[in-house]
Amino acid sequence: MPDGLLHPASAILPGARKGRGAISNPAIRFETTSREAFDDGWDSLADLADLPPLPTTLIRERAKSAMSWNDSPDIGFDRSLNPYRGCEHGCVYCYARPSHAYVGYSPGLDFETKLMFKPDLPALLEKELSRPGYVARPVALGANTDPYQPIERTLGITRQVLEVLDRFSHPVTIVTKSAGVLRDLDILKRLAARNLVHVCLSVTTLDATLARRMEPRAATPTRRLAAIQALAEAGIPVGVLAAPMIPGLNDAELERILERSVAHGATRAGYVLLRLPLEIKQLFEEWLHQHVPDRAARVLALVRQTRAGKLNSSEFGQRQTGTGVYADMLARRFAVAVQRLGIGRGNVSGQGLDSARFCVPRVPERQLALL
Image 1 (spheres, helix red, strand yellow):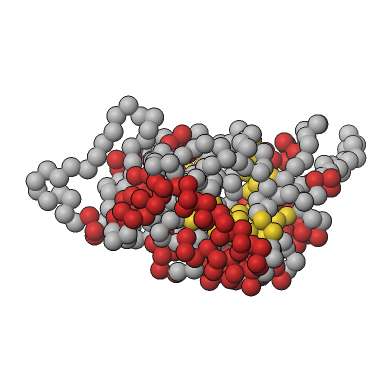
Image 2 (tube, one colour):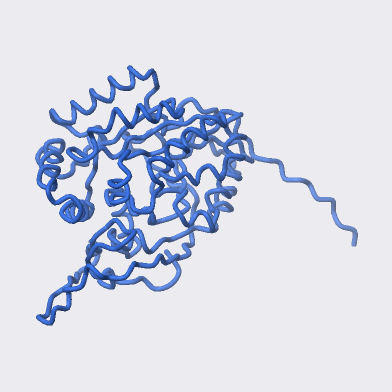
């Protein structure tokens, strides 16, 4: 659990905030009571458009273990490392938002303003990798929230984690929206020389205006493409993840995203259809009506076409790609584009990385001090 007192979701009034993606702070689903803003007749809510920017609060988390494990058939890796909870990028569609409720915060504005960091993660990781019987397989760095979100610039936990993985020759995959990954080129080059790393840049749209609305504090599309190029030129295997594809909003860009990414050096590609589990449904609907009201109804109707009439489906084998005619068409478009561009599919799982190189570093023996 994080240090300090938890802040109630009701502490933030609803309304668009500069530099933030969510419009509101939905109630925490595990609480027995909920609160909502109410106009008492004195125009209390009349000036919501002029609400001040929300500051970012950092909260230290005492992690009990370094790696998170899963056995999901939809995910190509069985372990992950997450230096942070919450993400300042503020992507309104982020599938990780509901996880904030587990620590007493709202998946809405709390998710992007109340961020938890794990300073003990590198030390815990070293202990776990040193345990007898540990079997190395690729670990996903930042599978829940972005390991290179803005606070990484000062905290540097992701870099410390990479240093541990480098010492142990442990394979790792990285997915990020940030050009900040280039800061760690020195470590990534060493890992790449031993076939121990694959980096994937997530590119949602090439439209800078749309990107700023959906992902207010993430790197611009141009900077992400530049990061792909820099990684490729440094000899680091790099791919692109066109995600999420949102029917009627950015899905028309799929082929163009792949083409531009390949032109900048990406050798693999993947895509994910928009997912709206739990509170994200409300957050995304609010965002649509705030930023693209003329297209809101159309987008929601198309999403339902890909989710058997609902806004979300959680069935294994379907939640990443959806079902129905529209979803099938998107899958075919992706397959044709990948074949035409001559690139591979995915690699978020780290398939092909060399797990056999894993080795626990020897601890230098210390000579006994003379009494």
